[in-house]
Length: 204
Image (cartoon, rainbow, N blue to C red; front, side):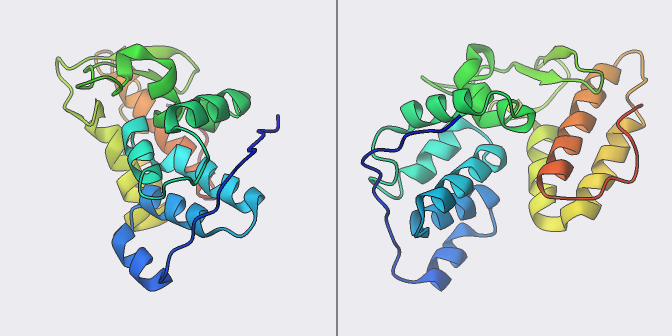
């Protein structure tokens, strides 16, 4: 499905080196910064789509869009809602934190403080809700979900694969198995997105 971006305004930056330094290595910041400098609309959309996966929440995504006024020609919520709907058949994008925030009021950071409830997908495809009872949350999501993205940025495939294997080993636990399975599946999604060659199958 093609997204019509009539009136799209491309915004440049004066110094690439300074912009890269400002990103601090954060893939969310870096992807949207690169989108702002893209010469072709197709490249810009590619970077903005990448940020749908790397940003931790809609709020984080929208904040970065706000650094480049006019980059998409209209408000961030309209753009993200339209883009997530256009990419609904892409499992990685539809399950991303940004698209989940738009689609699920229970895990959204829109309109105030984030609700401490997260809906994730297990290795066998079930949707399971994680609450705050025994799970630490940050930015409206379990710490482990946020940590996997950070590990990808810092340690790449090796780090994410190790994290995946750690949670995979706990996926059969009768008490915490579903939660571990969600984290293992999330790591699998990140591994696929960053182009890693998987060494094992997604089964506990």
